[in-house]
Image: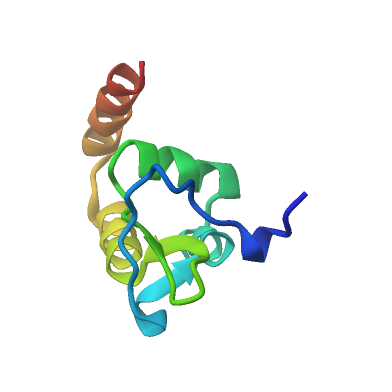
Length: 93
């Protein structure tokens, strides 16, 4: 099993490579957003977070998408959050 900090995206998935200062690991993104690690995958799948790889090819998230998600979570109303959950649930299936 690959250690979490060395995981990579599959080669078939076209993920942009970004500078190391514009990249966060998935566990670090989860900590900054205050959510569980498995939720990061769901946010990527729904298009709310932008996947990226660093110069070493490690899987992660762009810092700008994490900041945008944090801003949205801090300012969104309960109605907006419920609507987003409904859209994501329908779109996921």
